[in-house]
Length: 156
Image 1 (cartoon, rainbow, N blue to C red):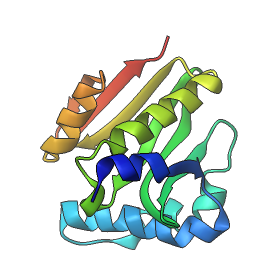
Image 2: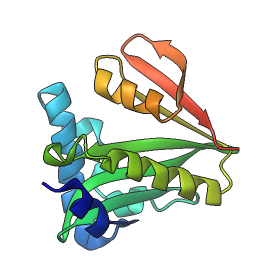
Image 3: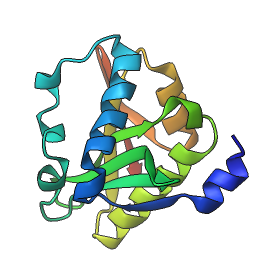
Image 4: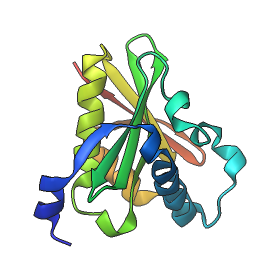
């Protein structure tokens, strides 16, 4: 895989019906790789991604390369001025190529356009690669809650 080629030809866009099944598969595959299994009841938002993420100041994005979804990410409303990063996932063969960083930057930019001043997110404590990734993107831990680590980043 040529990273430069992928980053030149990929496109990040708002989720649409034609990509909803692929987006769901990308997210679930990532969760299965991390947890070793999938319990669909834990992911009700993925049953209909388009409508789940169509609320005000909420958006689900896909990164498309060669007409296939290779990465996902979403921003949802948390509180006044605060958005939540969710559903960050990159297909395994595209990891460590900068795609997650590009997606996160896209989410942050979109969040700023929506008037968010701060973003929060959470990840599992055992997911050390995700924790290190968010730290490198200037997210700071504000709560260490047993199995979950909570991060925040000021956008202003």
